[in-house]
Image (tube, rainbow, N blue to C red; front, side, top):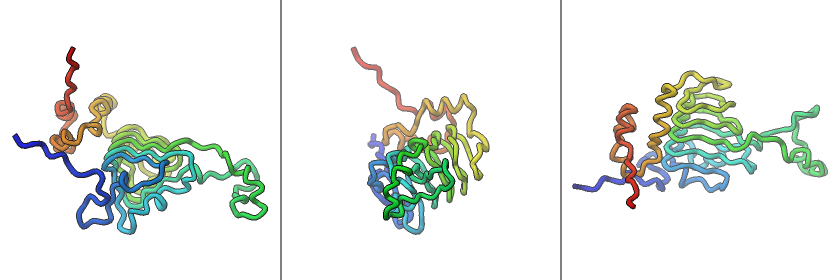
Amino acid sequence: MPATPAGPDPTVLHPMPGQPRVVLLKPLVTSPLIEVGEFSYYDDPDDPTAFETRNVLYHYGPEKLVIGRFCALGEGTRFVMNGANHRMDGPSTFPFPIMGGSWTDHFDLITGLPGRGDTVVGHDVWFGHGALIMPGVRIGHGAIIASGSVVVDDVPDYGIVGGNPARLIRRRYTDADIARLLTVAWWDWPLPHLTEHLRTVMSGDITALEQAAPRTTPPTS
């Protein structure tokens, strides 16, 4: 019996021959504050390789951006990080100390501003064109972010959100079926096994997906 093909190489920067507008993010990013899972990609006809500087904004740390596996990021998807915060407890929100000169003596006025923590994206999330994700948001597995959405609150697993601010439109499955999908966690399957059952993952039902899941061999005594 011929061996099952292992699937594509997750370390290739441009996975689609002749399409430089598509990049895999894991082999692209260099910042220790950005973590991306295998096969998550960004599509941009201009310069997708500038993702870290053009699409992750105000990332002065220490909060992280974490993106799971198999996420699809449409053109213009942007993440606003906590470094965008300004003081709001005084008459002015302007960050005077960053302008230099003697104003830097007051740098303590803009350090240590409260943040919302890491921005975390689950596995298999689809971002439409121009989606904007605000600091500290957590987006669940299997979610869909509509084009032009401004996501200011957490998104549940398999939720579909849209608008400004983004609101939950519906969930893709019932609570019971979402629990089954999270249990089967196809995004964690070994790549050869995923390759073998790709049609089930893309077009099968949940029962078929459960039946295709790798079986754990019980330990021998």
